[in-house]
Length: 441
Picture 1 (cartoon, rainbow, N blue to C red):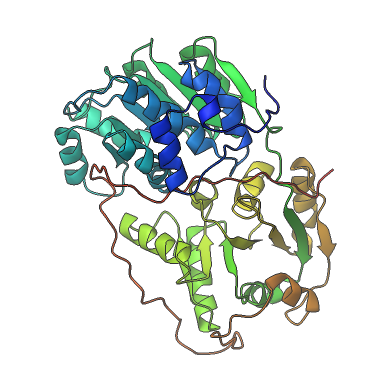
Picture 2: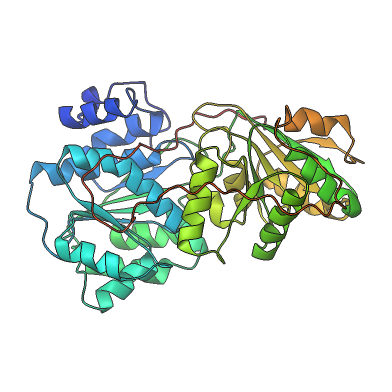
């Protein structure tokens, strides 16, 4: 098991010159530790288990060997018969992975597409009919397309399972097994995950052949550049406290436990002059993509999300994560928190709790290996909130919570390309990369 590897260049790791140039064109000149550790084995064709915390660069660690393998024996894409399969748990993550693969695939003249639910079948079936080399898919929709006769997996040469532990948590393992059963047993398989235990081990034992393991971080390890605060407040003060925290100029991500809570909080923030957008399962796919694009582009500084975003969002420069509703267990806490302190940047994580929640939150942070800074009896005017929020956004008007002002909304609408259409064009690389240090025991 690898725990650390010295820094090396992509070329010295065996990455073909064309891919090195494609990486350089996206601003990526040096490999991160998980890439340095895994690429020699994955490029050699070995089955591989890669464990690293969120933001460690796992996406490029599998995208590079995937594109390399297909480019060694170029073939004309066959209708409905991809040569590479990447399975992911969420639509957002599918789009993020596709954006990372795109410039590499374009350099090798490979076609790729994304497949997930929540949108119509037409564009996805058309993409498959035209022929694609790589599909990035969520298990449920891919099974539907296979059952309808639009896709076959017997020509798949390399399969990647990304965020395997999250797929297990979401109950996707039966579908993942059915899909893996359709791929050739002799094909290469790469599994990347934050943890390699419990249900994930079932996949390892059943589908992988003498895999090499590279684990760069302890399971569920926190990121070092994060500073964690616990803010305890009475329930009647909670909304005002959250509003004050969200009033800063920097990008912030707020987590609620329910879809209704996310929608309600966006409206309440708008009434206080803080434009915000929501991300949860009740939104259409177009709305989810539009809101995420507006947040990533900086058109809106505040995103309110349920746990659907904890794994699938990779947006740099999120300075502040706020747990409006503390999660139920420490894994969700770490995954949520991992949206900040990315690419070596520092970040703040604030958990807002009531006195009644203190015992559960303390147990959760202990399980996560976190020693947060606790501040009790916090009210909306507490000076700590201003320090945590940072400079206030100059265009925002923070009104009292009793204000009858209409909710502020973002009118900016960016045109969105069809994510299901095959493409050869390059997209910005979005592989989350973070080395991470944390204030933990």
